[in-house]
Length: 248
Image (cartoon, rainbow, N blue to C red; front, side):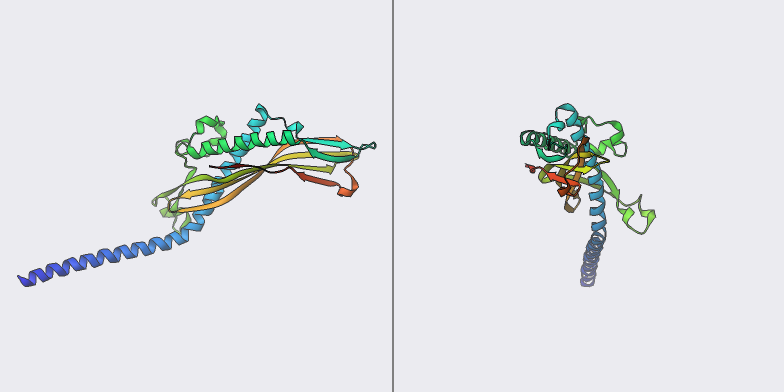
C-alpha cells in the first residue's frame, strides 16, 4: 500500500517536473524568437505605416487645397527697377491660416484611419487596392506572417500572422518651404511646398516602436521673369514659422 502511494507521488512529481521543464523551454524559445523577430517586425511595420500614411497625408492636403485653401497668397515677391527679385516673403496671416487648415486636415484623416473609419475619408478605390478594407475598418494596416522572417518558407502559411496598427502621438508639425532658382535666361523658378512631420507609434502584439514620418508636398511651381540676386548664389530658400497641432 505504501509502495503504491509512493509510486503515485513520484508520478505526480515527474509530471510536474515535465510541465515546468516544458514551460521553461517554451519561455526560452519564445524569448529567443522574439529577440530575432522583433527588429524585422518593427522595420516592416514602419515601412507599411509610412507607405499608407504618406498616401493619406498627400490626399488630405490635395483635397483641402481644392476645397478652400489659397496657396497663391502664401508668398509675395518684390523686384527692383531692373526686374531682379529683391525679396521673397510670407504673408503671415495667410500662412498661419493655411497651415492650421492643412495640419488639421492631416490629423483628421490619419485619425480616421487609426480608428478604422475609412468610409468617412471617401478614398478612391485605387488607393485601397493593396489593402484589406475589412481589416482597415478594424484599424489594422496589414498582417505579416511570422514565417516570412524565418528560414523555412513552408512555415509562412502555417504560423500565425501579426496585425500591424498605428497610433498618433506627440504632435503634427507643418511649415511652408520656398525655393527660388535661376531658370534659363532672365527667369526665376519659384517653388513652394508644405512640409509635414508626424510622430507615430507602431502597435504590434507585445511590442511598440516610435518613429517620425516627414513628407514634402508641392503647392506652387511658377516661372517668374527676373533673375535671382547674385548674392544668393542663384538659389534662395526660406521656411515659414512652424505650426504645431498637439495630439491629445
